[in-house]
Image 1 (cartoon, helix red, strand yellow):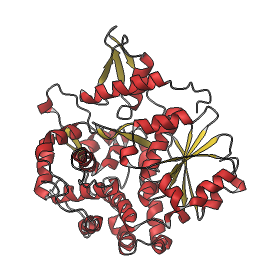
Image 2 (spheres, rainbow, N blue to C red):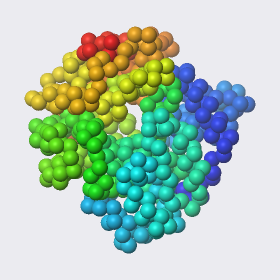
Image 3 (cartoon, rainbow, N blue to C red):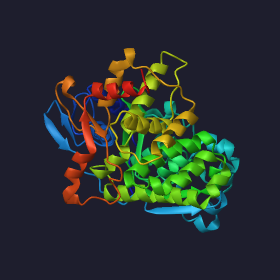
Image 4 (tube, rainbow, N blue to C red):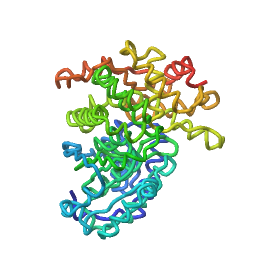
Length: 456
């Protein structure tokens, strides 16, 4: 943790944003050597841009001097080192935790909607003299502008950021904490955030042209705190969104048969009472433990952690393209992240790219799709096919940088069921990745989607 971090100037932010726009427009990948000119941009702006470009590029090159600078590989630390499970908010802010959440060094970043649903969260923090920043947690607001604004509101005395909210809040606050190099505590308040964004330290914000989570970094999360009371206001839709990630984990660790009853409990009764069910509590804890195990084995997503992106290539396409279409068509429906993940998993099975699902898994995904209220096809590719190809090629998992656009492929995660029942030995990593990923042409993947009826 850097207790003497220099402030990031407005000029440095401005230059960094311009560089990011250029690199995304050029279709560069995280393995590319990122170009800049020292006559136009500060070296520090290039370093900062490379740090957050697709969660970290390896090298920058000054075209004026032709000098390259290799970026240091971040130190790999255990992410989400501590998980706390509490029944109520008062336990978190009790006297026993005052040393941990002290007014002098802690800042809480709170989802505005959560603050409205649970007003005692902010009022209790105000009583303790702890500073609170509330943010509107929407996909449109999940961007670098929001992150920069938060950074400027956080002074040098802050050494700990506590994120209280859903996935967007956890992503943005975690990104800000990583930029400022302070301790980060996640208090996820949705099922999706608990099993996904709140665990693992993978943070990010959206870019207007490149799409979902293209700007970000890997942050070290000190603690994840689950507070049962804050789950009581979850709508059925929010519960269903979290189930998409849970089904994804069930595929990867081969536990769908074990988890099926608890999953169906949440499908049948998405009310507060369901979260008191022992099987549901165990389901959530085992999902967090599974993700934490994968993250600890591969904190910087060099190999096996890539498997956690199952269904996400399509999910991010659906989200990003829907946002793009909505710019000209106000009625365009934009699926949430949880809905998009379920749709991504379903379409991979429907197209045959994922084969041999266990009994009942596909029907669970169908129930989640039906519950979403989204009508098929949810969007049209048609005149937006060029944008769809661009979004797919910007996917963070892609590692190729071919000169010809027609040769570039999408690295698609297509694992066998139960591939992560045990973590593969380091000597077998290359064979594992080869067996569980595929390099597909963007048009090939789009054609698979068209055959499912998900898009037209």
